[in-house]
Length: 126
Image 1 (tube, rainbow, N blue to C red):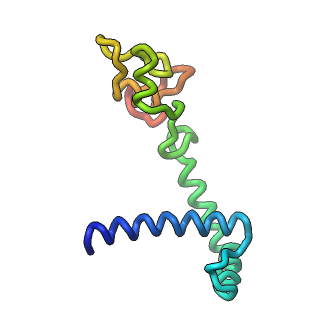
Image 2 (cartoon, rainbow, N blue to C red; image 1 turned 180 degrees about the vertical axis):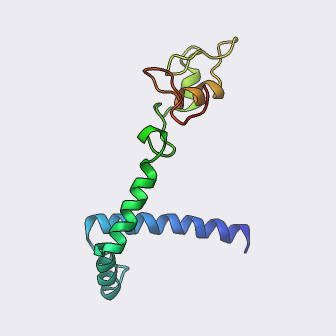
């Protein structure tokens, strides 16, 4: 499989998950899904097997890291460029380099520390 084909399949997979997730949440059949398939999908989404699957995924997302879940960050989303404009300090009060620039390491450290006690949220040493 070519790299272009692989990238296309990944992107289309993402779009399909988004489209189907929106349709499932709204409980409204998109025009491009035939009625017989929509009915089958609705039955599957209401089945105990699917509900158990969703519940397990929910637990997986929320386990570890003290209930913070996998990949949760404590910081706000700002670009590195925006952070640089904050006079050598990132939004969490960590100072940048000696030349007044903001560093990626400082931002990463701030994103993985709890604001109230500077404890690492993912078990890594600060």
